[in-house]
Image (tube, rainbow, N blue to C red; front, side, top):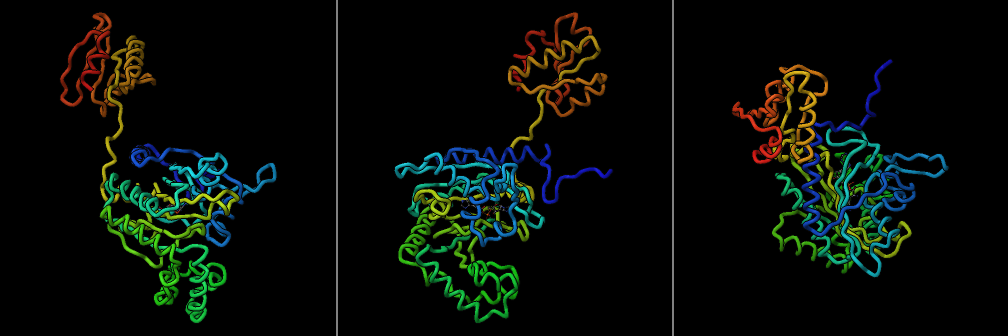
Length: 418
Ligand code: HAM
């Protein structure tokens, strides 16, 4: 029988990699705390309607990429393809923004999209997500963008590009949409089939089609700045001011439209020069109509999500530090079978004192135990002599020196050394 493998587009994050992920998540946790964000955890599956209404019926995510199934109760359920809609649902359901209060929430975990797997693109991937709810003003946008830039600074990422755009609001986007429809209808024969379909359903998405002919056609397309209403124009100017005050380098990308329909006003992405085709390490923006689209109150919001898998890839490629390599400090070694009980007790005592310790539980001989101790800083050796004398031989594995300490003092001796 062929062995069962992990499903296509998924992978196992094994110990050789998982400690690096822990470093990224704990750095994110500290950064979020420093910016006043609190951690939340939400279901990984939601009612399908949350995403069809929230992310948008005509997006690739909803049309082609969702893992949707009917549960045993006959309800349509979807594995979350992103976190923002769920965070907004939770804010509404738990009244987190009652009486105009703001809420700063962050989370991390797996997301699911049925996409074609390639480098940096998986069907189960992980996001670190931050959402600032309840504040409509541009300072919140600047703060969220600053948070993402600061996270990447702390992780040591280099060679990043911040691109921003405005996608307007329900007042001015229809005007822009019509301009695009007029423009692209005249160039219909240059568009790919998907974009011809987009022309009636979601013409803004033509702007970020990767097809060369579509890109050429889009080169001369009108930009949104000619169509923005006064409010959106002023908002964008203030976001830019906010970024410039903090001395951030960014560029304006008129083609940045994002693949989710809930955006209003600010949209942004952070790109890495070291990722290939899937070069976005983070994306986000403002979504002032999302709450109402999913049946909630009027709660504005702005946020971002960064791809943990991609951040880890770029850090690896750039040789960034992941902090201290985790390992056990002390290995307790039994020279004979009679000493195994004492070794087990010493190991547990060390662990109770917060010293990471390991011992053999498989009945291996002295030499094999010493080999296993190889990566530790100290070996605590107990044999017949030690048992008789009530001592432990503590060997410093870095310099080979060895001392004899009283059994009752071994833990405090090592506490002083580690
Ligand atoms: P998104 O641009 O779809 O936005 O995803 C954000 C990030 O998740 C991407 O920049 C990328 O790093 C990572 N990502 C997306 N798809 C994959 C994949 N298949 N494999 C690996 N990594 C992936 C959102 O999801 C929005 N919810 C962001 C947001 C939060 N907007 C406002 N608040």
